[in-house]
Length: 421
Image (cartoon, rainbow, N blue to C red):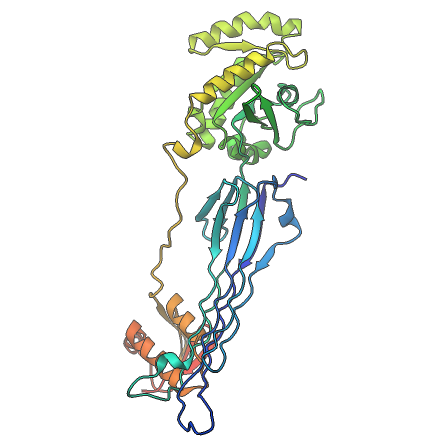
């Protein structure tokens, strides 16, 4: 089944905990700290697998999580870092943050990777906290928490040439005679409900990929008739074959309507080179309309080709015309409007202080919440280190300005602290 949209939950691994340990050997009464560092948590990585052509796998599995790093050991033993979790996706996958709507990446090349959630670093053992003044530090770090995101994946087919037109214009038939593709074909509108791909051989050494885009109707740019689902696939193509229905009520009106829908959905689509051809030339009614159509389109500076996909008339000429236009068209990578690049917007050191009751406060912020999760609350040294961090970030000053009193409760993520002056 062809699936071109999916939403999944992903999570990277937590870093391994650092160890608080002191060397204990016979005849070495003061061996000093030797707690090892924890290993890094696994990254959550999306990787392009060229053999995939649909997002159907995400119908069955929607949660992906990387493993956590291993904890450090005594005698300065490092914990083992976890392997990355690799999630395969098809070429043409566009990745969005489902919550914020930010574009995270655009995956098109085989083997291309995108780290969507970075694994947490391992916590440091107490060896790192020794100094001349503190030779027996009872301080260590827990592993950094992993990241988690909800992703929206959209698949945009990657094809050199797209075939567009109104329903029942003969697009699937044209694709079937130009390539080895076998789309569903029937003499009624909306036979094609999913895009189809095929490879056409121009000569012994040259081939191009064509996509049959399901029929577009009025209002497609607003989502009418699954318009958004279909129009998205046109964005990847470099040249369009605009197929007119020679037996249609008004092919010129259909031509104008389709181009309007392309421009409304994405202004860049209207700029794509088009090869315009009227189909069903084997029918007498289409032959009668041909002179009028050629005359009207010539006024707009458009040369109209005439074909019959069913009778295979002028099919190779149409392919050569599209291929020649393709050779003159820059690749998607060289386009003037490249895909945007995701950049973090927030400063991780920023925080907010809010009152939750008469004597309850909550401190929220990426850095302070991450530090709280990495603190060994049972060790006084680690608690003092967290207090110094709150002071360095300005949290203590902000709480005092807000009116905190001795004995009030302060919440940081899932942790509950008591304020003492």
